[in-house]
Image (cartoon, rainbow, N blue to C red):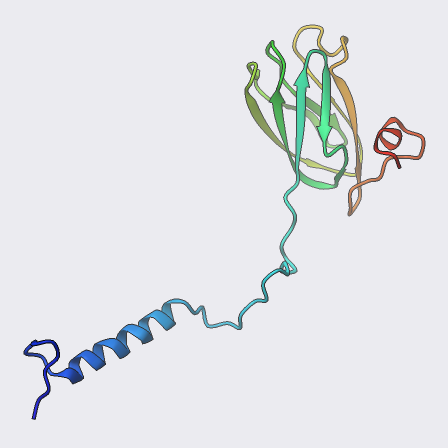
Length: 159
């Protein structure tokens, strides 16, 4: 005796087979065969994003954050000024890293590999560097460097 579902000519057992296949497919698709990773804890190979925003305006550069660890860093040159600017970075192992000209309100990205040491950042357009668009970034070894006691960065942050 065949039992039919919803007036369909197919037997009910075909519907059960279909449902079982659907559940099995969904379970397999959601599994990668490994044990689940706890949420909220980064894996050992995960590295934090290393991005420093350089706000450029007449005639200053502001870094956020104002410190970095050695490794690959992406500078986001954000032109908050009323005239075009650009960004150049120089220091240990970096001699000619620069962005293209950034129009007012625009941004450019510059990715470099930094070693421990001191880096100079400036705007190479016209006399912008001489007018104050020049700053330094101290890069630490394995972790972000702390500003030296009594330095302007230490005083500004209250350390």
